[in-house]
Structure formats: C-alpha cells, structure tokens
Image 1: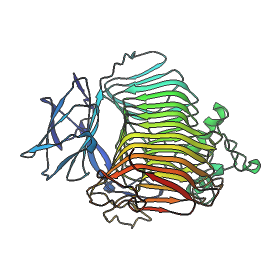
Image 2: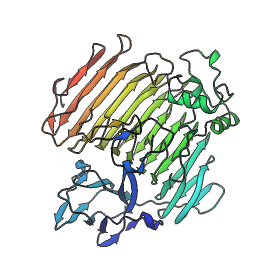
Image 3: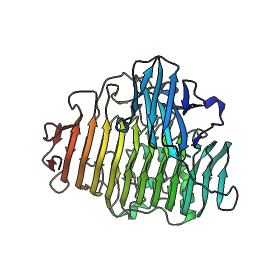
Image 4: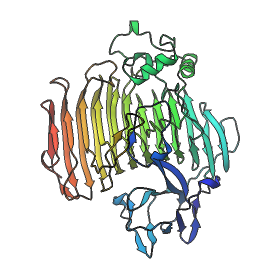
Length: 531
C-alpha cells in the first residue's frame, strides 16, 4: 500500500518533475525556500521574495518494502545526488531520466547539480490512526483547505490533519496537558504576515538589555512597567523570574506582546505529542516550547522556511523532551536548546534529538545557546542524525549567560559539506548585495562570554561535552573546516571536552592540527581514536 498526498491547492502542484512510484504517476508540491544564506536583524518588513526560490516535496506513507522511483526533470542536468549520502541510495540516469530504489522509511533529497530547486521525498510508515471526526476533545481537519488562523488547544485535545488537508493556521497551547497533534497533512503559516509590533515569543522582555533590538522595540510600543512583566527594581540578579503565574496574567502578556502566530507554540504545558504532520511557511519560530515538559516530536517535517527568524524546533527551559525521525529544513537555527528570560527558574534538561535529517539554510544546525538564562542546561543528546546542508556553524555551544552547561553528547552524526556551500552574509541595509563566495562552515564552535545576547551578565560554565563517532564528508580532499574553543577565565571555561573518532572522508582526524582546533588557555580537551 502506498498513500500519496493529494494536495488540494492546484497552484502548489509542482511541474518541475514527472514522477512515478512503483509505476504510478504522482505529483510533488511546490514550496518556497531560501535561495541564499542572506539574513538581517528584523527590519520591520518581511524578507524580499528575490532572495528565495522554489523547492518541492513528495509526501507518502507505505508498508511496501521497496519503492521504485522514476523521475524526469524539466531541466537538463549533469549530476544527480540523493542525500543523505549515508542512505546509500544511488541515482541511475538514463537519457535525462532518473531511476532509484528506496527500501527504508526516511527522508531523502534529490539534488541536480547542487541544492537549488531540490526535490524532497518524505517516506513514512503507514499511520494506524483511529481518530473520531467530531467530539468535544477532537479538532478534525478532513481533506481540503481550512483557514483557521490561530488555534488555541485545550487539555486532553487531539488535533488531526488529514493527509489531503492544508490548514492555514498556527497552534497555541498555554498551560495544557495531554494533547496530541497528528496526521499526515499540512499546517501552513502563510496566512500570517509578521507585523512590526509583534514579538517572536512570550517572555520577560523587561529584563533584556537596553541595547537589544527587542528592548528598543518594546519601548516603542508599550510601557515596560506593565504588570505582565517582572518588577526589576526588586529583582535579584541570577535568581530568575517566572512570568507564568496564572492564565489571566499570561494572557495579558500575550495580548501585550502580540507574538507572531506561527507554527506550533507551547507555553507551560506538558505531555504533548506531535507526529506525522508537515509544517511550512512560518512567519517566525516554527515549533517552539517554553517552560514545558514531556514534549515529543516524531515523523514531523519542516519545510518552506524562508522568512526571518524561522528556526526549527526550539526548547526554552524545557525538560524530558525528544525529536525523533524528523526532517527539518530551516532559515535560522535548526534545533536549539536554550534558556530564556522569564522561564529561567528551571533547567533545560533531558532532551534527545535522534534519527533526524537536517538542512540548515542559515545559522547553526545543532545549537545550545546563545540564550542560556537557566540554572543548568544538561543531559542533552544529539544522536544518529544526518546534517546534509550547513551554513554558519554546524554544531554550536554558546554560553552567553549564567547556565552551567554539562553532560552533552553528540554521537554518530554524519555531516555533509559540498562544493556548493556558500558563505553566509549579514544584510546591513537595503543596499547590501549578496555576493556568492565558496565557504566551508566551522564544524564546532564553543565559547563563553557576556555581551550583546546576555541578560544577567554572569559567566557560566561548560563541562563534560563529548563528540563521538562524528563523520564528515566533503568534496574536498583536505579537511577545510575548523573547531573553535574559547573560555573566559579559570573558573568559567570549558572542561572535560572529549573528541572521539572524528573522521573526514573516512580518514581519522586524531590530532589538534588535523581537526584545525583553535583553543585558548581556559579549555581542557582530549582526542581519542576509535576504540
């Protein structure tokens, strides 16, 4: 059995490819993505369309063991590559037509002469969903188009999006428990145009530094002494604040700050499962949780992120969470673990990112920080993931505040660089032009500092971080990436950092020189070869 999404929006059907799966013709869906790593601080208007391009995706579920794809692109090409490379799926080309087989559920990308206008293939197991179409605890979106705006869910609610449904809206949860968001359809954020007065997230903006763009924005639109914020005159530095005291107070904060209606946003909630759906075209952060516990993502696909600040999945001061078997393509940091003002009485801890395929069009692919307002950020595992495109930094741990970051594991990661990687550029004004320059992103950056992104301005620590079985693949013969490690002083440095079995094109990188490590005197690390 093969179930293929039948997109109900005719204008979104992609005509760049003729596709058949096991002999049956199917259609891909067109979606807008970033065309270049060109970004800026929010300028009060959305990103220009000329910085974007179309990609496409085909979404299906199957219980068959083998899928045979025949794909005829509308353009001529020289080379067809299927990523992740670790999948071992090889494209055979015969007179401009591409043939290949997929024998495992997962997420694949067909690229013709580089990453532009890529075709994404989402191959999921068949869902055995028995969801009632009506009822007080069910929000059921059947086949077709649904315009819902911001949907606020309640405790013990199930939201189901049918495979052939497109829901133009976002989902908000505040202080709820036991929620499921599932299906195989689309949650599309294009209904919302980000406004100058809208903030990205509900948190305690009264405590952010005066020099920050958030504080400047806040002063322009609201009295910072509003009772939905902390009275900072009595705040004791380093103790944290908790802005969620009751529904009425937090609803006032949301009304005051007008956060962007985008993707999924969960506050002070627990026991939420998100599975199967496609999230696309968000006006800001794509899937965000603050002050939550037991939030779990599985088989979720994020694509079509091209607008400013469209991060992937962000955890702020959250506990016991996971992201498994997901595909994320984002135009800002892809997976983030952070600590944020107003939620910072609790840790970010016990978070697992596993078996994912990640594509970063801007920023950091795997990120801890640089917002680290929390007592601890600990017990974080990134495991068995393919990072198929990367820009600013592949793996980043930036401690910009007082958190004790420790017990962090990066294991069995496969990182891909290519000849098409471009240097990211910050757009400083309307006259800035993107000039393509070949670039290999840094593999790892770790640092401590107090500066622009800091809130309490108290140095933290980084300890017990392990990078194990990290495989880097590139078109270059030599390892042209780098590792940068910077502490602050003896008390606030990087300690017990381990690199074990790091390879480039299957060759061991067993010395600081081979890894291109730059480290100051406040860093303690060792390199171990394969056991």
